[in-house]
Image (cartoon, rainbow, N blue to C red):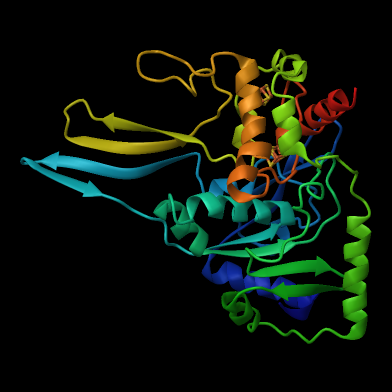
Length: 346
Ligand code: SF4
Ligand code: SF4
């Protein structure tokens, strides 16, 4: 990894130059919650002043810029007895500024599924390749347990990664593209003091996380498959699917064909779906493999913390706690995992 030091003024210039020639997405304050705490979302910005890099988290993840909630996979027209099918991939460049380590780790996990050898998605891959990513270090967010699942640090999956050293940024460069774009502004080599300050910031951040016991979780989940913990929490679940929508790593979807009344046009539409919906596991003939809330809630946790570990040797969850924050029923991963651990010890 290459490192440079970038002054705050030069960073402003850097963003302004990016804004001149590409779409820029960044954390932007969109309001406050009932206790007055700022709410942020990753949104398109037109000026540097719209960006708030001191944000704690965003309500939605940046997944939406790689896996949009709804997209046309293909469209067809039928004219004069000729079918014409069109497939479009998004190739316009885009920059996302200020992603936290957990959200970059979430993209690396999506890469394994959607940009791997087995089921590559050209729609996802074209968006991923054409997105310039600038990450930034931050203090732990409320409820976040990214350190417990190994997602609080990131070593690849981005172009540039910033650590705020008050009057300057310590910049990690992870791609040729990142190196070239950074050439547009003045940087300097890190001194011993810069290196020390950077390591101090990293130590301070790492020391602030609250511990969550996830050791041996896949095996614990197998042992606790019939646990009453699942029913306890599922009885509260509204099957609204919000947890999957805000999750940076949930990628399940459904596809439907939409055909015009005159049969002259059609579209194959992909839409994100949630395993918490009643009909998620419904098959032809009306059989539902997961008709009750308990099996659906359990399925989501088994996919995140057990099935993905078996397939990729790491959990799918990055500990961002968005699902816990959005859930109107108060269901959250830290309480569920905590209950499973406690039950195991009883
Ligand atoms: S957000 Fe909460 S209530 Fe809604 S489906 Fe998820 S766990 Fe259930
Ligand atoms: S399961 Fe919850 S905590 Fe884990 S990555 Fe998804 S939203 Fe974040």
